Image (tube, rainbow, N blue to C red):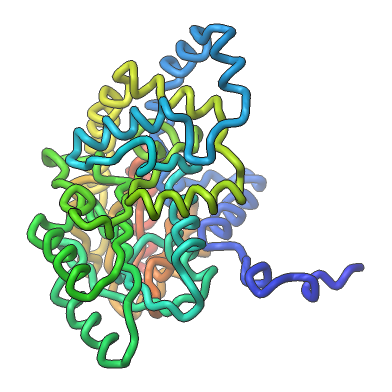
Length: 405
């Protein structure tokens, strides 16, 4: 047999299954044995709400001459029709971006995170992240061996006081923070919303300390309490904020449509990097996405899916109130797809996962959302499981937690 390990690069050697992969594989094995697994893991779309009828209409109504264009190569930055639609969509939320040079279409927002990492990160660069923050963003950054510095996230999002303290600490060490990654609207995993005042202060600190901001807005449109505050990008006047969002939470994760908006200089460099990865995006999904925007289907889908998720969130909260032990703590999310649960220090949520799977419930241990060691949190998703499964799953998990406590 070939000694595979000696052929890997350092980056290749570091590629190991993440927590979601491990959970899915374990769940699949149990399901092969005939066991029912209720998944409260990733932020998957509500299966009954996928707009398949609209997509079938678009495909059926596409004329032959359009197909001749759709199935050709396209620009690495994405089809112009889609970039125009994305520009108009963002304008409705306070962001101005020229589709000709300030927007790039990506394969979901995860590719945007990878491209920013490729273009901006050197080994040892200091980047700031929330404590906790989105686990797949940490994975994207870690490939390039930066120095991760954590900033606490509370009920109002990332603490700007803690951010300023950390920035001063970094500078006192003779270092420079290059990039801040932030999820301001219904943050993954906590569900917190960065206040308007904190958004403005983030920009002030970026100016004072000369760092870039990567704003990830995957969840802000799923708002249970009104309008989403203006994104940080909408307040940016100097071009130091890059903004990414995605179709995955508002229309369909299977279409793999995301985008990144930023200054012409930055986007130009990122387009060059992207062309070396996949040349261009899939033409069919880009065409469908542009048509969904043009027809108004996206604007209709957002309030519909928001109603579905609000109902599911309420059901999960009700079940937790009656099934979870008193020692468990959580806050009601005002939007997004997740519930963040704090457990007593003596509970290791990672160790508990195996037993939870054996009882039929999958969740994501909170340790994966921190750059530092933390073990007593769990993230629960309410967008994917059915309403009966939400109740059953919470009852099972609550019983297990009561035994542990």
